[in-house]
Amino acid sequence: MAEGIACFATINEALNQIPYAKLLGIQAVDRDGLPEFYLPFAEHNIGNVLLPAIHGGVIGGFLENAAVLHLMWAQESNEIPRIVDFSIDYLRSARALDLHARCEIVRQGKRVANVLMTAWQDDESQPVATARAHFLLS
Image (tube, rainbow, N blue to C red; front, side):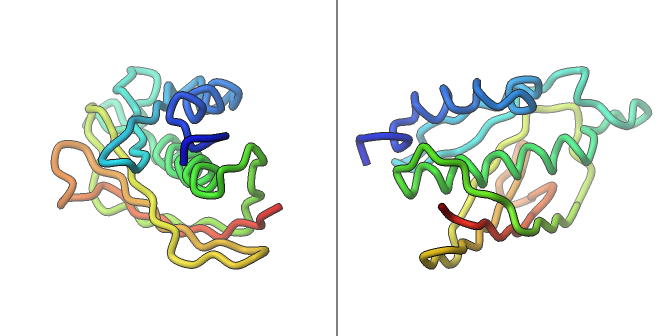
């Protein structure tokens, strides 16, 4: 996958075109030939200042953007898939640390794709959230 959105530099260029992703500071890196998404800690992403913990909406937006970009990468497409539904499970508080995410396409047909997303901080075996989404493909 060397053409189109498959290039990790192109994923980051696409992220810069998505205003919410740009506001959050989402980045993509190459991990063993697959995209891994990264959200560096930023004070404006804190929701609960007493813990402090990253806002749940920030985590959800991060995972949704990761899934969209992962699908574009997998399809070698520059067209953004449209979300049909999105469901997230918050497993533990996301502390005031960097956040990482990885996506897996569970099933992809001609018109619809099902994607699983996992977000973690220090330890990938202790996710802070998991999500599932269906996307309508172009």
